[in-house]
Amino acid sequence: MRAVVSVLVALHVFAVFVGPWALPPQNSELSASAARALRPYLEVFALANGYRFFAPEPGPSHLVRFEATLDDGTLETGTFPDKREHVPRLLYHRYFMLSEFASTLNNPNLPGDRGGAVARGYAEHLIAAHHAKTVRLFLRRHFVPRPEEVRRGMQLSDKALYQEQPLGVFTRDTP
Amino acid sequence: MTSAARYIRAWWAEVVALWNQFWFRPADPATLCLVRICAGAMLVYTHLVWSLDLQAFFGDKSWLPRATLDALQVDSFSWTYLWWFGNSPVALWSVHLLALVVFALFTIGLFTRVTSILSAVATLAYIHRVPGALFGLDQINAMLAIYLAVGPSGAAYSVDHWLKRRAGNPAESPPLWTANLAIRLIQIHLCIIYLFAGTAKLTGPAWWDGTAMWMALGNMEYQSLDMTWLADWPRLINLMTHVTVYWEIFYCALIWPRVTRPVMLLLAIPLHMGIAICLGMVTFGLVMLIANLAFVPSEFVRAVIPPRRQGRAGDDERTAKQSALRSNRPSASPAKR
Image 1: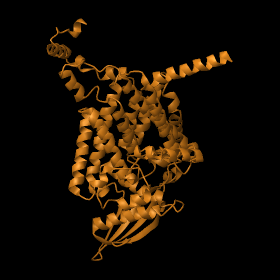
Image 2: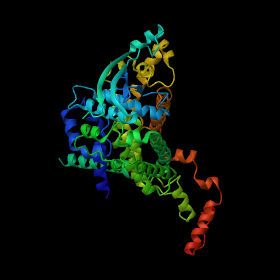
Image 3: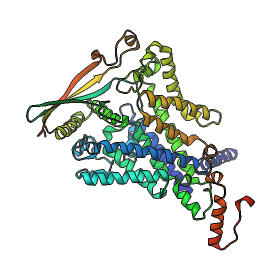
Image 4: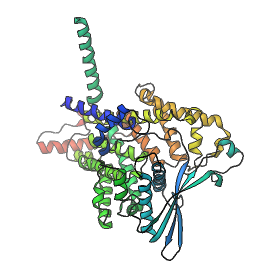
């Protein structure tokens, strides 16, 4: 009994280690092989995490801005996350992670059109929620000012700190 | 050759003895059960908040519909029962309310053997359904839910335990090796988390030049408390940055010796409460502290939260009498033992 549990514990601890060790992009062939072998276990028990909190370093944050055009031509706009709309803070953070997810996957170096798939999912949700004909999505990157810029009076919400990039135009019947 | 073989045999015997001591030594389940109450409450709150936008995250027209996840997760093993209920709001709400009830029962420790396993299954199901809306909170929730299902997390501070006492069973649970196993798994997992959290930061220049904490605290989307006054205190920003990295990297070593453990645990409080208060991640900060409870000795937990018999004199005597009546034996007052 004790021997069996020992083997299971050793395998589990190894899997817990492999999860962050093998997470791309910074991984070795050895760690990637171990992760491939353990993939079912890692995925079922949600162990394929990097635990790279604010690493390699805290960067700009990302928001998703949308413009929904209704059948009668009315334009409805919004951004997520939105601190006023998404309350309590945990719900706000869920929306924040959705916009960060769109940014992470909006990377041409990733295999397949993952960013496109995510944007299409968001657009389909917005089309259904707003009964819209068309939805345009934009990714807003919000940079953090340097301490010396803040000392000179720059606000965190200064317009110069934002960059925007279109994610696509999606219609009700977008395939 | 013979002495070398003898040395290796002795070394191996010591390794086996230490392994057994580490994983299989029976332990008081008090710490594990305290973790259950805190982690269970966090599971209730986490999933209660999903209720505010349940259809938007888990319905068929959700932010992350089936087609999106199929494109992202080819041949995935991330199974979730929530796919069965997304098409019907009534069914989705029913299964969601059921999960909330399970989490609540698990928190108070009722039917804990069953509700602990169901809580782990439900936690993983929600995680697998919305991978794009997750963050550290969910990773730690899953970790704790799984290990609390492994160990006897309802053996103390639970309704189950209270019912057992009423039925005439012994007042406190004896030390159990499964309680030790679950606590050890949380401890080891936490060490691995901090090790990778710390070493991953070593690749970022801002963690070396001491400005990383500014980049986090000056981020308007994270910020829940205006910390821009820190712009006038660059060396304080440097100190916070360096302490964070070194604390995370050395946690896996310094949390074990008795001398350094209290220091590491005390440092965990400002670090995680800072994340909670300044960066708006109260749930994440708290759940990390809950996981750190695994390093608090059960004697300390018992001292802070004493067993019920100390709170209500006569309980044990009454229990012993009930037990004796059932077994037709004379009762033995605990006071005379």
